[in-house]
Amino acid sequence: MKRFTVTVVGLGEVGSVFSEALASVDHHVYGFDPFTDVTPTGVERVHALADCVGGSDAVLVATSASTAVRIAADVAPFAHDRLTYIDLNAAHPDIKRQVQALLPEKTHLVDGAILGSIRKFGARARILLSGAETSEAVALLDTLGGEVEVVGEQVGDASTMKLVRSAFMKTLGASIVEAIDAGRELDVESWVRGEIARELTDGAAGAERLYDGTRTHAVRRSVEATAAADLLTSRGIDATMASATARKTAISGLEVNSGGALSELGSLPVANVGDALDRHTGILPPQISRRSGEGIVVGRALTIECTAGSNDALHRALQIARSGDFLVVSARTTPDRAMLGELIGFRSQAAGVVGLIVDGAIRDVDDLQQAGISTWSTAVTPAGPYKTSGGHVGRPIAIGSVVIQTGDIVVADDDGIMVLAPTDVPDAAAGARRVADEEQRRRASITGAIAHSSED
Image (tube, rainbow, N blue to C red; front, side, top):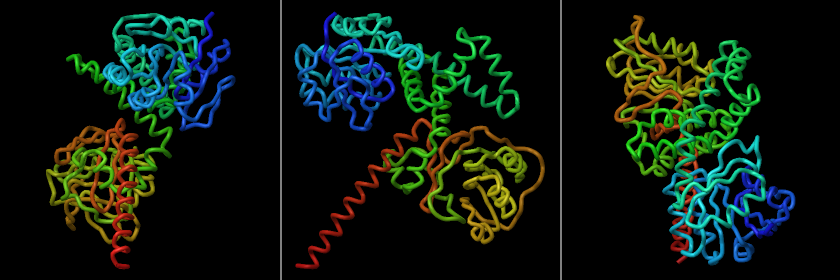
């Protein structure tokens, strides 16, 4: 067996598993990841790619689709003609081709795609490979004892096959999460778990693995499902299920990791979020103004459509509202009737609702302000609502040019309101933080210039 020297970039779950497995079969493994302190057993930790890439036979990248291109650019100055570069990220084929364009022409880029659960199979999970020269990658990965299959000579072939498979597998995981969560709410969780287990080869263990894996790695799986949907759409193929799966897994990720991106959004002005997303995506009309409350408010949209001047749908929504919900009401057909006042405000507050937005009118603004209840509306009127039945809860609504779905993320402050698809939240939070930091730098520069001018 040839003994390889390998640089593994990314020491998260996948990178840690593969680096430790490679070291265990006597390969010399460097590990590089500036974002974690983890050092897998047998791996030599390095703090700069310059210290390891030039002396390596192979580079194995297991980071994320969003960083794949940047990692290739960082590796490229140290890559040599004999280097095999294995990109295992679950990414759109176009990203793999962008990676190829950044590397030296004689570096052997291998498009890698992991199939199956790392939790179950570890480094022996099935791997698809494609590229013009895959022999060294096959020789390296074969030493781990898993199934390695070369599926094409073009970079992107392996990723294409994985994403088509993901359109099924990630949808299966998302469906299991939805069914088990519904079973829990309806007091039939044990029964529904049993029914799912009966249909899976791995039974209850398989159901549990898919449930836990989908929730734990929801952000990563949402990115993969989005890539699958984008691939299908780009070829004119209907991607309804893949798109829905991306959204569902993103929502699950926000529920599990609510302290991450959502907390970051709650610390940043809506203007920063808008600037991070090119200042046009998801911003509600300026006619909707803040009427009560203060500060930045972030929550999940629960959509409500009120019709014929009645707020019956809003009352129904309060029966199912959860802590962290942001009630978003379309009542534009009868803007002369207030859809809510202090009593609904107090009921919402008791249910843990973080805010209320009405494309229409509200009333009792002073009482809502004194209670600290955050509200936004297009108008204020003392005229109350009717009590006739009608309207809808949980269906998509449109406010201005923005279509809002239950589960979207709403960010609002005194400047206005922005609505984000769950799949956009991680990038929006990171982008808004960069905008805020750059503004802080520019303010400090301007303040410094003013102080220097005053001294002169």
